[in-house]
Length: 99
Image (cartoon, rainbow, N blue to C red; front, top):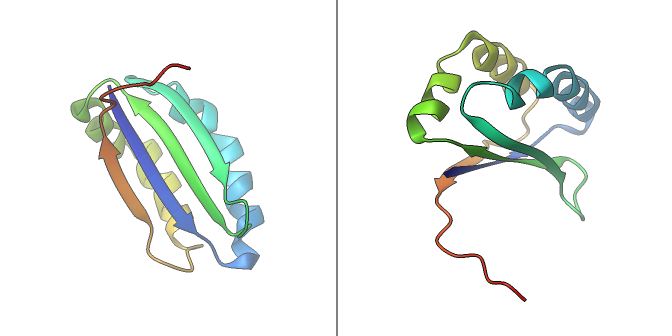
């Protein structure tokens, strides 16, 4: 399982547009083949910073999404709202520590 984190800082005037676009597309993203999990987080102290947290079956499946028209359309819209360059990275879960 590949875990993808994308941290995005938006112009204050772009937040509502981002949220509207995310809500319009979230089910399509989550139901894209290979996507097993999708969350949207908002920074506790800076309301213009959002993070997507998603789980992908493999890097190949993530890349298929990134090559799709869905991603290209959503990302083009989203990029225009950025205040800063986004930070994105992929990781694998090595261990979950139980209580």
